Image (cartoon, rainbow, N blue to C red):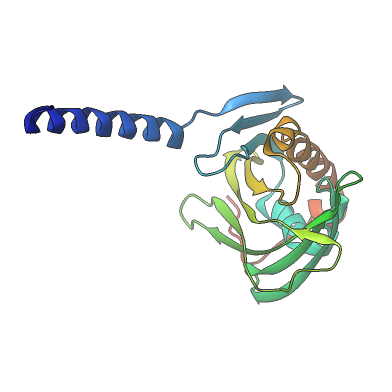
Length: 221
């Protein structure tokens, strides 16, 4: 039999191994999946999900107001967000916070997905960095017929002034598809949607209505 001291040492080693393994999972490194045309897409395992998360980074010559004008125009998300079929603002808390509803198209024979989420935008008055957080909201809207509600959905945008009229954009997203779509299959195509969405966003920013937009609540660098 193991003595009390040996049992204590064994448990200590196991606890240390568990801590190291858990820490490694929590701090999984981002892996570059796409690096093209000034857009870089990363993926990594999520510490609490079989579905990976993605991050996109790019730099654009635009004002903070221009970018936020696009993001605040929720009904026009289908113009640039890949696979986004319909969006609606459900409630506006103020000019930077609210609730929205999104319908996501998926290939046949799967049912369309939908999600209700809350968004919140803040700007650091010193650095001028704008941060937007997105998180799903349970039970805000009943589940809709012929649609599968995403069980998990969260993300963030960060707009960092880079000088000379440029802004560094970082977009991070994680979601679970729900229904019968395997996580392994979703992970294989994870980079496609954020890559296409950012490309479309960059093109939309060239339109005068967004290029020349001025949002009084934002402080430009």
